[in-house]
Length: 383
Image (cartoon, rainbow, N blue to C red; front, side):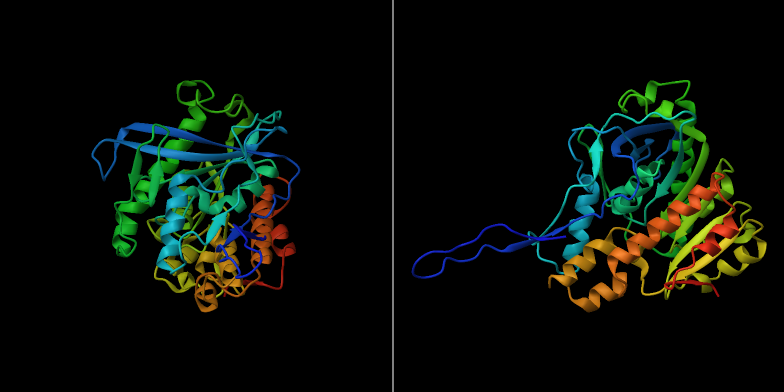
């Protein structure tokens, strides 16, 4: 990461005024061997009514995938809706506008798809409440570089802003301080229905290409919709757990510091679930945790990561730490949001646990042996 000066002044006599310095935040490079492509997929569920508009439910997915080498344009770190959310988030933290910028991602827009016999496994991703898909780019790019197709969902009218291909922008209709009843009874069912609909469309696309004409050629043919898992941050972690409970096509999941909500809290899961939580996460003590734990028959690994906070498990770990290091954000704000852990170490831990977990889910090793073998000094089992 580097500071980028937007201008400089030097000369004889009085010094010319210095243009403000703009802090550039960069994504760590993916660790896998494959280049990464990224695209968007606009879908309309005409069999479901959007609870906020009364019309058909629209979903915009962002897809990262293994790609061939290409000179295609580098994609933005975040699509427009996510960028708007990022600007709003930082303005609420009193970071002055125009003092920071996000570097481009490591993904190439609509790059040619890498071919693989049998196809690549699919990882569904659900972001946190009000968040958009670009907030987990560091995780998604890394997984794609290791041979996964990551399909991240923008949950329309809950996400801060979703910009569709025709230029329309759907703004959030959900206050961030909504009570838990709204999360459990409105947002969670809508998110799970979005997830299952997109999985239905991925499966159907192998025989009906009407919805895939705008996707890069070969993307659907080179993914394996019979090998599916899921991960998500915050309410996206809750969505992951409830989606696993309702849809056994999803083989396993990872909950990144999200509460246990919905009927899964009473019924538990029979699929494997890894939970990575902040050091002081309250979720293990929430009312839904104990019945979930008691009724769960699948492999379960609840872990805490020392030095992390709730926003450590998305790209804010990188952004807020960088802004604090350069004086644009008070360090106490940074520590409250993303903890004191070194951001590079935090992202490396998350990438390693995600990648190794999904590798084992799809048959490369025993899950219990793998998680135990991943022991790191920052990672603590619960309780």
